[in-house]
Length: 162
Image (cartoon, rainbow, N blue to C red):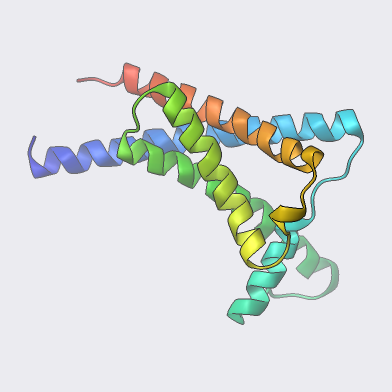
């Protein structure tokens, strides 16, 4: 395979992975919202808290004041999750992970690390203090993300031309 063909194959893998990651992210949000509805719990504020801490740590302010700034922080928090979900999928598409089970595990664990890692590093949360319910409410949506991402990615690969 020539250099141009390898580059095209890598780009195709990235795009397929990004699409699979987007589908997985939708599944994660669906499972999370179902959990919120079933238990009557509020949405987590940790994405917004992470944006605030990251803004302070990098000395890059979120512009605006009052409600306008609060809405921007909320939007940036939500976008960070979308970026992680699509990014993990794209990375998996680029490396051509083998087997749907391995891909699902890599996707779910990668998304958990990509989402929870910055929160823990910035002191927004301490994973060591999480209860069993906390871990379940985080792991189950990420397992759905992994399963859907892997299913879509492998389905798209089966459908690609040789």
